[in-house]
Image: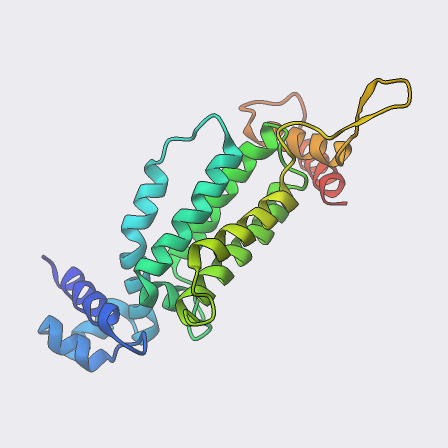
Length: 239
């Protein structure tokens, strides 16, 4: 085990057992058997160390998400991703609290990767015609809600005692807000016919076309034309 990895293991063990979700560099150095100059040479400062520890702690979680095979229902995958996110937070509260700590001026790389993986699922929802808004706007709605629920469940367990129920209710509210139902709503007409009611049809189609265009390997449009069209489609889907 090299020096950097030994320091990360020591810091991760201390963080996991810390009641304040924090560690001192002195304690890390003692646990890793290195001097302070070695630690600072590897990580720059305490903030650099903590960011690296978060990435180290999230490695297994992100590896599982990277390896997950998409199902034929991207909305179900969106729900599963939410549940896995909350489960990781509950199992690793100190890593999770640190990941979203306002004390870190430089967000850990794990946060950006988690956002990117969510965006990929939402792109699939859009391509399938199941997204009401653009994937970018949907991600801005889903991630804060998911992280907010997870943080409240681990910091206020006495208030939110039924974690599964709370998480499921908020999840369904958000999923309903950003996705379309499996079947469009229908209403009976006076003549007995059943009419399909458009559910933000323009927005759904715009989000779908945007996702398909971004995923296409080639396009007859030039790069500026493609960028302009994508801008228009995003504005239509988010209107």
